[in-house]
Amino acid sequence: MTSVPDFLDQLTTRLLIGPGDPPPIDQRRRAAVAALFHTDALGVRVLLMKRAVRVGDPWSGHVSLPGGRHEPTDVDLRATAVRETIEELGCDLSVARFLGRLAPLHPNNSGPHGMEVTPYAFAVDTVPTISTGPEATAAFWLPIDRALAGEFNATHHVPTAPGLEFPCWRYDGHIIWGLTFRILTELLAHAGDIAR
Image (cartoon, rainbow, N blue to C red; front, side):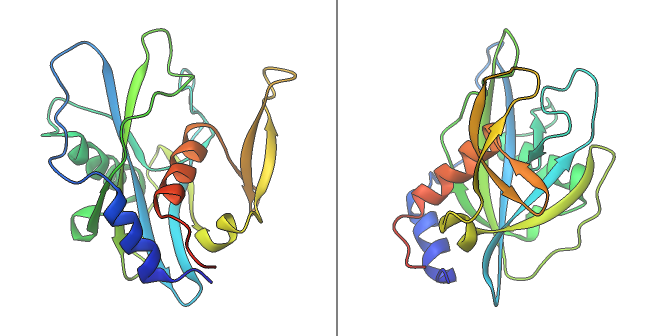
């Protein structure tokens, strides 16, 4: 089993720490997501959600981290991640421990003008109450130990693009792929070579 303090401590030391990165004044679309970790007797887990099916949403029906587009009322992108997590899952990250952030990523399916997504990592010692909003149909905790061990490794074949496939995790009937898979595997890589 992954050592909980080791995982979170190593992750914290390797993430970027600092201000919440207010977006520069340009025309690029920006978003932020929250990776919320919690620990229990079984190890470290991360909170994921299944998005509602919505026309025009490139992530419609996908499993994802909570998060969304930056709004002018958000003081910075970290505030975006906090606001979106409350809206989507009823979970207030202001009481969580902030671990740091990854550098922005660029989704492949964000449209012709692109979007920049910044992941922020948080941790809690006890499981918060989750209440899915209209943008989420379900929420669950993914066991990090089992992901690190390769137990969930699989391949996702994109139904709308025959022959196109991506690495993914399959867990409890859910498929974690695309940007969410990229973010989580990068976070695990930042945690270093942790004993299982």
